[in-house]
Length: 563
Image (cartoon, rainbow, N blue to C red; front, side, top):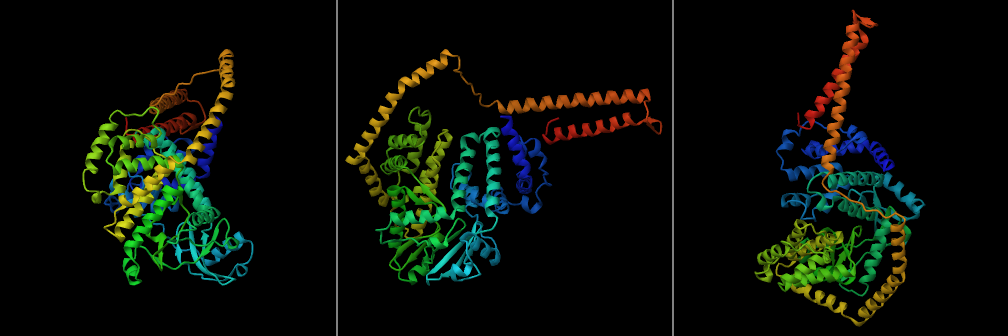
């Protein structure tokens, strides 16, 4: 325990400069009160020097806009965290969600000389031995990487994605600091425990690890292409592994039309209704058939090729859903489509892993109101993403925790729905989803699936029965030897403990201060040398030091707003 605390303090000192930058930026945009509410101590607290209150132009901005500007100023890790939070509609008010959705990470490109150094270091040979030519001006530049057009020695047109030098160290430092702050929020700021900020940061860290590992992205592309190898309506770029590494990814260059450029699609005689149907079909296949899906299907990552062929790009962030979660979510969607209140409640509780002891008090009445709001209207007026977001807000109110990948999937479905409705406002997404739901239910009842489940159940039951006597003997041995113990955990006492610790520290400080004043007075009265202008120097120094201590104590009290 003590070792872990020293380790945390040491890490805080190591990252002092970044801590100062983060806290200073949030304070600059009017969030100093949040920092003050965190019980930061020791080496961490000493790193903070809060600036003056926000300037007049910043104060005029809305709170949501100030948050967006703060995240953009802090750099790529915080921008991407904001983008993740934008998909968690149950955490933040709509005004903040709208602002966070506008976050962008377009940054000036790094000089080509640095790009060349990264490529040669990663591929282990000179640039001329890797590419016949490469354009020095990038096609695009983002916070993690930038992309250059190139030609292979064999003549293929490619794009080369190169990680920005030093970005990995920056991201890892930010992730460690985020984890520290999330832990403090969860333990010490009222109302945040139910949102599980530590779990959100852990999920975010996992996704950032994916984005930093271009070998993982190459694997994602290969798996994605294999899934749709027999799908003529989809195209995935080819990866050239000999010209790829951990921080360099070389892919086939595919020139298509961005799916959001509606006029360009029509000028190329491409059918918007067909494209809408195919995009929805492909995203649903990724989620409900394969359980491996593109986690960021915004218009910039979907291009359309001749023949209305859909091409997905940028596979840095992918989502994964296990079979059980897909099936339970299918139950939820089916219940919603059938306006089955009881079925939707049961599916929601199973998604939250609350089926053993479901907190049903008040939940069913809230679900009844939810159904009344959304389901008694024409199907064409239902907005699927808005409906499910509202449903997940209910789970937060009732302290139910959903799997992180479920929110990633919801974000992908929401992006897909917005895109499809833009391409074809008449498209019926609910009707298109029904066959997928039916197929999920049919797969659950298939003979092979039932036999496999029966076999797995038999093996697990056998293992349990074989190990049960040993477990009983172990428990009895612990009870007999007095090694068994019961641990009680008290929630809600941490703020009281912090307050008592602060009070005791101030009392001790005041006693030392009083003792110093008394001792200095005695020395002055006794006239103990050495003297300065007839005044004992030691006594005078004691008064000065006591004055400094008193000012420090008063400043500490005033900073916490309590006299």
